[in-house]
Amino acid sequence: MEEKINLIKRWLGTGSINIFGMPFSGKDTVGVRLAQDLDGRFLSSGLIMRAAEENDKDLLREMNQGLLASTDKFRDIVLPYFKIAELRDFPLILSSVGRWEGEEYDVIKAAEESRHPIKAVILLNISEAEIRNRWEAAQTLQDRGAREDDKVRSVLDKRIAEFIEKTMPVIQTYQKRGILLPVNGHTDRESVYTQVIDQLAKFAMQDSDFNREIPLQ
Image (cartoon, rainbow, N blue to C red; front, side, top):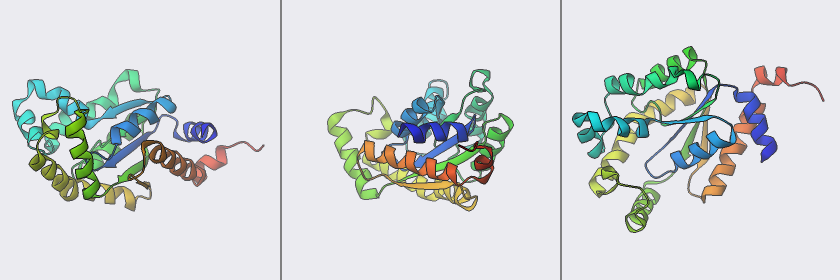
């Protein structure tokens, strides 16, 4: 795996990889590990928004109901992170940054302008049945912190509906651009991560611009 990770590092440069998936699909788990292995920085729109809840009661109410934050709030709160000077020389691993249809174009533009172009998008595919199984397990394990939106089944249902209605069109945009890499999210964490690395390494090797830069052995 180390050889593939080094290959991905060279291909990615200071670019970005965006990771999508339904609730409980493991986006942050994969994203944090990928950022560590690629010497990158991890940015989660969910974590950024939840940090902003303390000063925004309307945002807190929306997210506790399982709703996505409005595009205006997304633009004001999340997009400025691309311009942080301390991130300039690092690749970015994004967890569902730009989840509402239309926001993907804002993300693409902001990423390009900050020298972090979106080079690949990972989709962790998982069924609704498995999501509910993982939600049930989380209620027993209590391993999701104090998140209010993880405690009520009806809120989970709303989050799933929001993903299907608002985020799937975003994913389809990336698919049309030829940078979407689907991964089977039903397996154990290690197997999922191995798939992600395999997909990214294969995608990098198919990048004609990158291959022209690889020196002959």
